Image (spheres, rainbow, N blue to C red):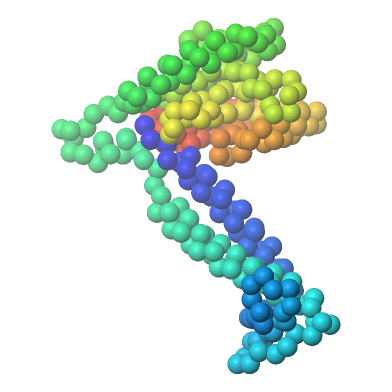
Length: 283
């Protein structure tokens, strides 16, 4: 199993930030058009306290003395030069990252097997031996951690998964089962301690990332966005995740219910394929 899709999510997120920064810088630079291309020079470079500024304007080959009444232009020229260089570097990074993103194809073991002559096709193992080993160690450690906390609303857990985990809803059970069938190391409602030192959060599912085998990916089932109080609580919860270093669609993901309040199983399958690159999950 290879989950390069997680890296692609990160690239797209960084691209969004770069493009937003470029727009803001370009808008600021447009206010400094009179300074773009202007070159500064000092008569006595170095540590001397006695010097004068000269400028060479765009389209001119000569430097002219910058009068004291024009000293405010110095910071404007400096800012314009910074913005020009920043935009140049952003353009370079955007070009490189788009090249990587456009050429990216999630690794799909199933497609490799299907492309081989029939005599060589095999059943693709869901996880590597290394991830299986690290996943078991992670599960043992995090389950011990989970025991230190009281169970979250045990009276609401009326459904049981195939491995005996009690969950609150049929949709949560379906999400759990699909992730398990993908061969992933997962824990239901593993307590998460936010950076604000407030009450612990109980993510619906926490998954060990097969990329580095140490990053914990959170997946939340969002079921009642039709309710005002639910939406408010959801927004606060996401805010606490973000304040604690999680980034939506990078290491924090969501599965939303349909209008009738049930989960769409194809949405889960697509999410698992996009995040973890696993496509041989039961539909």
